Length: 328
Image (cartoon, one colour):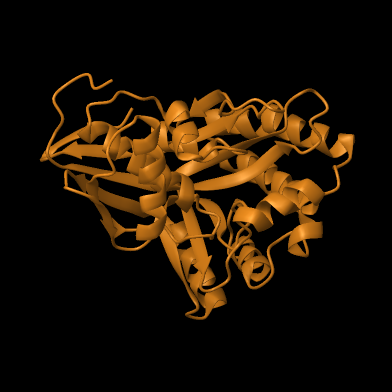
């Protein structure tokens, strides 16, 4: 039920998320998937919501936004009304979590307009997100680097957050998004997960060992060489798990060449986000970021865009009129 006076207009800015890899496709211990990922401030979603006599949306991804809005309003028994304006969208089907960030932003904005209090995991269920990975849900809420623990079969709950960590301020992320090469999504993604062969138990154990005993300690101690080596190895192993569906360790198209070019330019850690085609590199400082950015732009040859900067230290940001507040 509404719990306070609702504002007249709400604006939400949500960062994209990078998915660094799943932990377990076998599910032998009762949970499946799990994963690691982080929020990056660019690209980002900028959405505005305000009261209106009917439900309407404009801007990129408007139809998808309307679908999320209908789910939210129907869940709470509210009339189909409200105006959504998407001023800036995260590239769709690129491995950046555009659907989850849009769904959560739409739901959170409407919740604010109607004075409804709802936490991020519950909101994800309402708008139909977080069905496999919870990385996008937790980065929307908290930003930073997140580790989530996977889902139990036939349980509707969003995967639990095992840890949220700040990324060292000096680290930079180079995010390269090829143009016109969509990654798997929707029914194709669901089919891929149903038909992928289970990985060897030794590989699942190796990924867990790398994350627990190298990647996370290196993150906390700001040891980028160790972090990057662990992350690159996790990407190599888990990319092999998806090779049957995407045709190799990386998505078809320029992603593999992008990863190789950024590694050759000195990146400490490289990989593909989710199903791609987005590739990323992690470096120390602005000078290294410029060198790797130049290598990524050369590899793209004008057929894509590169975003460079620090990681996002917070999740989505909400403004009521001119007053800015944290979403959660």
